[in-house]
Image (tube, rainbow, N blue to C red):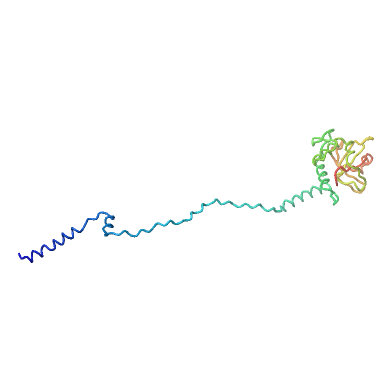
Amino acid sequence: MSAKKILSLFLPIALLVTTLGNAQIITSKKEAVKKGVYQKPEEKKSVATIVDKPIPATKQVASVEKPKATKNTKSSKKKNVIVEEEQSDLVVSSPTDSYLSLQLINNAMEFLGVRYRGGGTTTAGMDCSGMVTAVFNLFDIKLPRSSNQMALVGEKVQGDDIKKGDLIFFRTNGRKVINHVGVVVEKIGEEIKFIHASTSKGVIVSSTDEAYYKKAFAQVNRVIQQ
């Protein structure tokens, strides 16, 4: 075999050995980087970004508005109608009548038909002064318990000055002292209508036009401001 052929055979082998000698087995990325075989991709620097924290949801508070005062015209009308009906059934009011006097009369009228009972002040039975004190007590107006003592309270009024709600006094059965009382409910001319507790008929409305009361009439007193 010629030398030229032998050289051609061993030359590739020599080159392979040289290449293998220079080559190294790389078993990790670290080694590959060290050998320049592998380059790590550029790591993006972690930049701390300020992220707005979500605002915690707050409980929704229902806004409460004060209710606007509204006029209850419907109920007001009903009340007015009731008062008007009551007054029309009981007494005829006039512009000069006070609200208190009308209420006194209306409450006194609630006792119509209650039987007479000496010393009584309730619907179970009442006498004349007992009825008057019961009515006035409803309005925190305190009066003496006897008709004779009531006649000393307030001021005396006469003629056209007499109004609803005034107290009317009598000397009955020929007595020389006042012993009976009622509440004026109407004044028509010289006639005075009044509610009182009669010994024979209980609580009724009578008139000074009746002979008995015309003769027994004593005086009229005003105990409330009119």
